Image 1 (cartoon, helix red, strand yellow):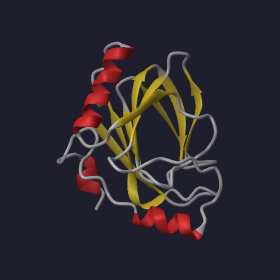
Image 2 (cartoon, rainbow, N blue to C red):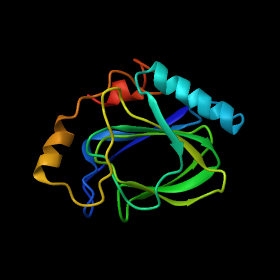
Image 3 (cartoon, rainbow, N blue to C red):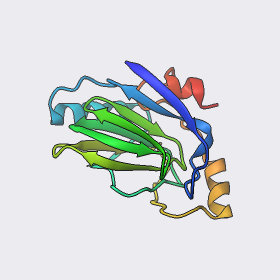
Image 4 (cartoon, one colour):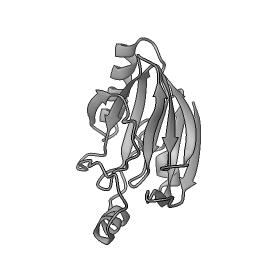
Length: 166
């Protein structure tokens, strides 16, 4: 598994996260069939304290979460995503890949295959919201104070998140 990481500065109305890196896991799990890959992500996320909460696509509009960090496991298909808000970074994802987005990170789907399916998870105790405008001061304070997860959603207590998110 190859892991890329990058930090995104605030861009346009999207706050992103100037301290915590986006993590992009290429081939995080073996991409077998849709159901098998989805279950592999659900098991990894659940075992590592990131209870899976949904299976669906990714919204086609820019948004971020101010109340949770997010793990996305690509269970089927391919997509081009924009990470970081309007004018952000385009990335191509495929079945078996995963992303971890720190709170405040803008994201949207630009295009996706018809079979595109994602498993979404958040650290235990963090409930997600959907933000589509610049954050208030209160929201900025909430994001800055959001607890770090106890484990990497893919690799547990020794993964890239533990090494990089300090």
